[in-house]
Length: 194
Image (cartoon, rainbow, N blue to C red; front, side, top):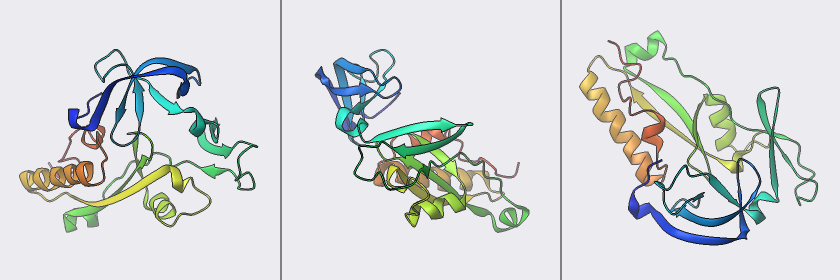
């Protein structure tokens, strides 16, 4: 796990009533660090063991995320003030494949989303992107930030690499999607004709 030092507050300590471990639901007591985007993890810093994401106990009391037949959904707990809302879908992974027309154009649109409270990214399709941007009540739009951009696939690999890298870096800095370049494995010529 890597974050620039300027984006971190390290060597913080909790007595056990503030945070729970996101993956287990157990209360956490000990050192933790915060990232500028509002997420927090176990350990004094990112190099201290294997950091686990922490959730604030007040935030955890509102939402409950479950999986049903490998299709994730989120449902609100009965004590939530929004209990009249129906279950909402969580965005699912979609692998983009450019068409022959896209190759003729030398570009195509890619769609991604990021969890609002942690640096977890997934590639999505246009339909899911539209639902998130339009705040469709069928999807958990308030838990994810959507992003779309043109991905270059011209025959000029160096051009594709430079333009795609610049876009990803801009998203990381301007939108504060730290770690997005690692998510796409810094493969800035992906889908380019070989």
